[in-house]
Length: 83
Length: 458
Image (tube, rainbow over all chains, first blue to last red; front, top):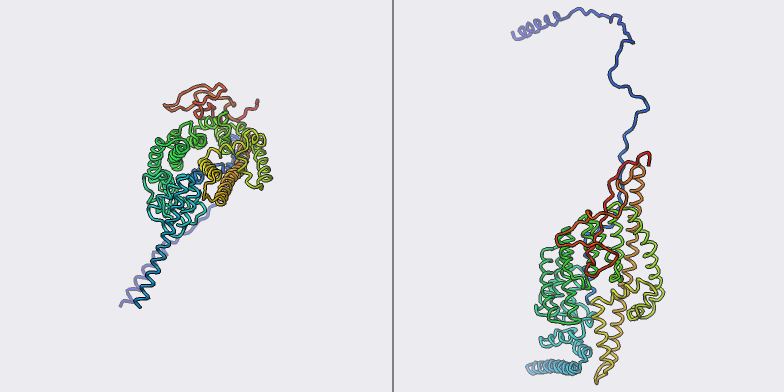
């Protein structure tokens, strides 16, 4: 019994798929005419000479200059210079 | 068996008694020398008995009294164990210092714990203790200890005179300067400057504080004040205080103000005047330094002679001769000499001659080390100058590549560039150095660091 029901459902489903198939008509593009003289381009015209590259960001190499963190060595030396 | 025990007991008690009587005899012998003011002989007589056992309290007091006359250098050759056995404040301080140099702070504190508050070395012990805290990065405790040191040394300074007063004054000022140095280390530059200003201008330490104060001003960005302070070293009064580091700092200040030409002038002067002078001094020392006690003898040569040989030599001799260590050692040397000349009965002249020779060697070594340190400093700082020169040239090149120049022309400045505190007065400099103005100068240069593009017409 079950098998018959499944078969009926499957049979019914195949019908809508068939019904959706349509005939496809291919159309080619018709001839188009361009009037080049009539074309207008918006924006400013840049001459090739004005093209420039942004300056490369230079890496700055800084040397380690004399830096005084503390006077610890002096403190010890002064104790040594006492006696 | 009982008889044997009695015999052993009797024998051991005899040995103890014999030892005691020997010590008593030596003490009495030493006391006689003491009464004749032969302190070195007296100390030698008694101190060698206690290298391996601790003296009793009376003897400790007696040895302390002797050391008060002879100075502590007698114990410099003692080992740590021998010093520990002596168990007196003087040897405790020597040991504490040895531990401080080895960065064994725990033992430094342990040695100083027993220092009596009324002892004449108490202020110095506080200086050592404060330094131990400082090196261990316990800054608050260090400042607290240095403050106590200042108060204690000031108390002694008031009740002593001459050399002793000078000693306590140096201790007091060293403690004040060290407080300033802690603030400097913690980057509290303004606080550091305030503490440096507590050092009176007449003090022996004062010329040395100028450089440190100039560094503090440099880090606060007050380059004009820093340059002004360094200018003090050009005054005739401070001619003997040439500091190579001051030249580097001068150049750095000009560099920070973008006065590259001025900075380069300082660098060039360093290379053309000071470095060759130091080379000459090095050659001279290398040539003569092998002579026996050359540096000791140098300290007694007339200033005009040493200046003729090398200007740095004169500076170094003047600086070394003002240090406490040199003066204490020299004082001991003269006392020793007097003892030899007196040649009292029982004075061990052979021993005194040996002690005198040892002291001479100590002074010779100390002066030698000071001179070598100075020469090495000039050489190591010349590397810093070279780096600075390269940096300036590199900055100048960068400006040229960018087609830029400094906004302002180099000018001799404007009064508006002088930053002044409420307590600072203003006087113009008229090519004269007045003693009371020393150390308070400021330049008025404008920073030229803003740049502009070079126009086509330039």
